[in-house]
Amino acid sequence: MANSTDYLLAVEGLTVSFDGFKAVNDLSFYVDSNEIHVIIGPNGAGKTTVLDLICGRTKASGGSIKFRNKELTAMKEHQIVKAGVGRKFQNPSIYDDLTVFENLEISYPRGRSVFGALAFKRDAAVRERVAEIAEMIFLADHLDQRAEYLSHGQKQWLEIGMLLIQDPELLMLDEPVAGMSVNERKKTAELLNKIIQNRSVLVIEHDMKFVEDIAHRVTVLHQGKILSEGSMERVKNDPKVVEVYLGH
Amino acid sequence: MTRTLQGRLFGRIDGDIAGILLLAALLVIVLPLGLDIFRLNMVGKYLTYAFVALGLVLCWGSAGILSLGQGIFFGIGGYCMAMFLKLEASSPEATKIQSTPGIPDFMDWNQLKALPWFWEPFHSLTFATVAVVAVPALLAFIVGLAMFKRRVGGVYFAIITQAFAAILTILIVGQQGYTGGINGITDLRTLKGWDIRTDEAKLVLYFVNAALLIGCILLCLYVRRSKLGRILVALRDKEDRVRFSGYDVANFKIFVFCFAAALSAVGGAMFTLQVGFMSPSFVGIVPSIEMVIYCAVGGRLSLLGAVYGTLLVNWAKTMLSESFPELWLFAMGALFIGVVMVFPNGLAGLYQQFIAPRLGRLLLRTGTRAGAPIIPPHTAAD
Image 1 (cartoon, rainbow over the protein chains, first blue to last red):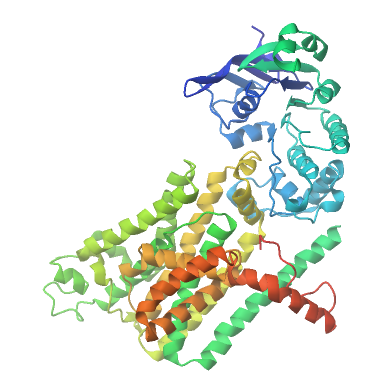
Image 2: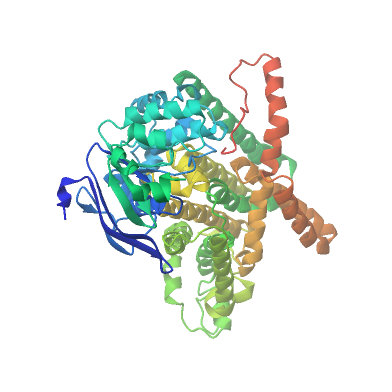
């Protein structure tokens, strides 16, 4: 077994069972620094559960998740975030009642304790950083708008922006282009290519063309287990993968 | 971009502060001039409930945590004040006909021979004043810690707060010798020798109460304007997103619950001072729900709305009970259904929807500088 210290994220023997059903079964995989790792697989393969386990939303029944050699399974969600893991949800998860500016400001990594938040000042550093991120996610002209009124694609970008402002070392994205128009999809790929500099990204995606464009390494999950792993080229030609996933 | 943002910010400050000034003028000028001392004292009593409603605006309106047990904190605040006043009224000289002089009368009736230990520190006004805020806040902290750290929320939390309200009522009624039982703590006379039963004292207390209320509104405004205020709104919307942005959500909920409890307690203490007694009938489930209705009618998203809602509902209650006592409960039920179904944002919502836009246009037409509408278009979060 590889020495986990070499990897940014090392998942080993990860298992979770819900009422006896093993959604993730003895799963092991590794993510390198600056690697874009894509997880694909049919519905119900356990992809989202894997992200839930890494970010602490679901507690593992067994196995370990090490991020920079720190065991994540024993940590609380907010501690995992502070350690440098950011997570985007499948449905755009933003604060409808707040403006785009306020959405980004809340994600700015300062004043995260109760009294820190009470004393938080909206200073130049915050405003500049928010403006910079807003520019990157194509929302510079929408800062004062309530997030509720953004389009679906814009909401997805906003959530990506909310993660970027935290500058996580590992960014986890759950179907970032689902439900987007062709044009939005293109812009999202462009955005992702821009933000993957200097960080690792773990992506769940169904859009095979999109995966081909961005993936360094692909893991195919099936019924909670790894079916195949490697470069996109290798995975695409694996007869097992063609049978259960790519075939239809 | 930043300029429009700042402009908007100042516009909002103007709007909120103008509203508070208007309320202050109503409370300290219009009402004292227009009402006799009996009615004014009554308004003062209503206003003590407004402290609870303010707390609910933050706890329920902003953060989405519905507590059906705010009467607990109102009551404890009131009892802390009443205990001090009762001890002052129970000097050995005043109680020399009792079998044990120097202890409150109800203790004597219940065959108690000495003051219970937890009553002792209430000889001190300083202690009592601190306890008014600290005891309810501490209780809210313990309840909040137990609930929110375990991620109990929504309806379950509401039901548990209701259970606590019932428990406390039963405890107070059952422990007659220590608490005064169902009658509560009555016959309060003086505060450091100053008779609180005179008309003059009632007038002074009314103004103290009004000033405290305005102070509390400003404090709430500060909290809502801080990033913490926006985090509360955010966690009402998408709790998980806040959690996965690096915040320990439970701590924020505990804070707002304690804050609301402390505000309620200040109201309770002022109630005791102005009305002259405290009893379990302000602690239980029914008064707690009534307090939620005050907040709902005024508008749970609006601090000022909650104050006006409290005044209006209580005024209606008094009017109706004076003429048709049996009708009030039905009216209250109808009011609750009406608020939930027809105008969920209460009076403040109606104001925002119908009056504010017209007022804005009117001000613009009369030549007020653009960008300074007194009431800018608020977002629902305001």
